[in-house]
Image 1 (cartoon, rainbow, N blue to C red):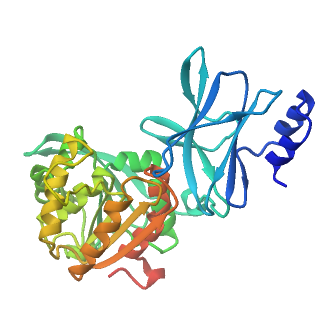
Image 2 (tube, helix red, strand yellow):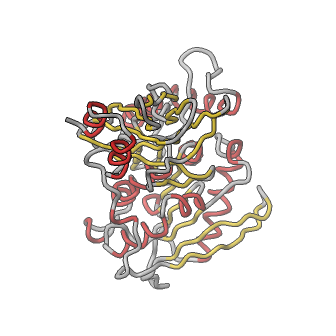
Image 3 (tube, rainbow, N blue to C red):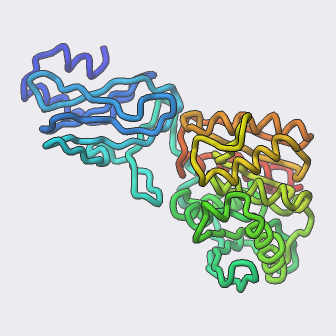
Length: 376
């Protein structure tokens, strides 16, 4: 019998409620189920989550005679779900993190509580390793003819030598990858373990990303004709296409794909995470709204005229996000051109820790280090 079933079957006394809560370990994960619990006085309690295909708001039930609320639902093994609780008092609902759960995922909008399904574990390579040599992170600026003065982050691997040539990785929303996806630590660990080639990494950001990342030709021009040559003047870079990788998540993945498409053969490696690859089969308007119109136009064109523009493409997406259909549709389209494509789905959503968890597999396949048979 599950913990919640045992509690429901027993006497609903304050002492029984205290004993149930004192056992801890919330939310309760047992096999393929999860039980969310909250304790307190309220008119109603709702689970708010971002699992596409399920109602985004689900009501917790109050255990008769107590102020304990609960909701049991299915959670497939290996899942990772972010959520909040809505506590309704006086007819007003307030969203809050789960006070019984210390697992918190941060993002630009704050933080969410995290539920881990059976079999999921946080990767060890996202944590600082005292024995791993640390790369150098800096912030530098470029005076761009396209966008004016703009700053970007710069990562230099610990074993950097002027006598060697290095691959280049361009990261859209790079500062958010550093803040919310532990990317600086991930780079240190993967490079130190020889799973990733020693790589120069540029972390770009945009003050108007929803416009600039939506197949803006000026953005592609800035990266390819200004930023890359600028970094090439600073460091000894491998000038071959396979020495250049461009990546991003969500709208950043659209920007990476469209930039590579506009400059075929320049970026030999792409890493696309949960891309906002909206398209239409009829007409030119998408249900996601006008911000997606340029994306729809680009994707409709690409779907009608697929072409080889890179050598190797890694695509990852969460099965619990609304963009799963678009990303699944992209895989056969890319493969039809003859490009080498690796496609990965995870039981996760549209969030930074999903993208973090896929970095090792994506980067080590695109730019493998000596331990993985030498970067090509």
